[in-house]
Length: 337
Ligand SMILES: Cc1ncc(C[n+]2csc(CCOP(=O)(O)OP(=O)(O)O)c2C)c(N)n1
Image (tube, rainbow, N blue to C red):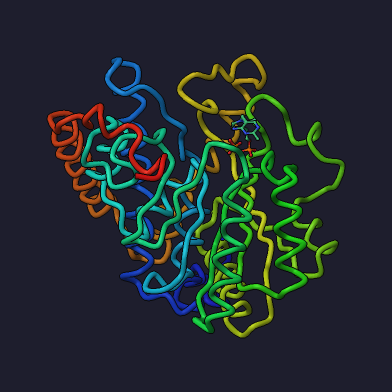
């Protein structure tokens, strides 16, 4: 915690040009992502939804980064954990639940994609495939198109530490560096690719180091701090809009739950390690910051949690009772008609 000369906690969000309203809204979005995710685990264990990949522990990185973009014209090419980003770009709890239940009304794919494959033409979110890092060259393609059409748009594409070892990432980064494309590569480094720890994935110290080889800046930040992530992403977006090219941001986070609803993380990491990481849970640390600067107290915090929980309850009931996709729609958009 940084203190000013008179002993008060430094108001970091205002220094970044974020109003009090925006700081609270960021927190609310993080809470909503967490509560939707927690409900999805319960629904999965109750046998009501088939699968989930969780955003728990990544919310600050996702919300902080998405806040730094211009939602009226920028694009997201997210990966399966990026629920917080999808929420900031306008996806509702109802829409997320329709996707989890694979209902016809799911705006991501009408129930045809796996959950966590965010996509919405309305919200400028490009649908991805399950192949790790395939969204990265797609993002670079949109950035190229934006540059050619002089649209001043920025694309943010996100992936994990494991994803940063894929050829797609390296080829896309190289091309974007050569052509100075308006793209932000956001690596959410949670230190594991399923069971493989970072030390067995890469010999470099930080994923941010990789940017140097492609001729653009690489920055490593504390991904548990939404304001830090906002700051570096805003700088990257401003750089991109000025025509100065890409930036690689490594947001160091921790995945607080198993890789997916089908994983048992007790086989590859100790409970002590997970408990230690929970002390830096971004929801707790950001709420402490908001209290320290006088924006939040216990009752306002409870009000936000209760309101978000009610939204999740309504979304769950709505999606559970919504109609399934029609079987004849399964091949829609797969083959030319
Ligand atoms: C090309 C490819 N290889 C393997 C997989 C299986 N797979 C799915 S997620 C994953 C781990 C990815 O880890 P990371 O990029 O670190 O992201 P995290 O899930 O930890 O956020 C793997 C290996 C896949 N989907 N695609």
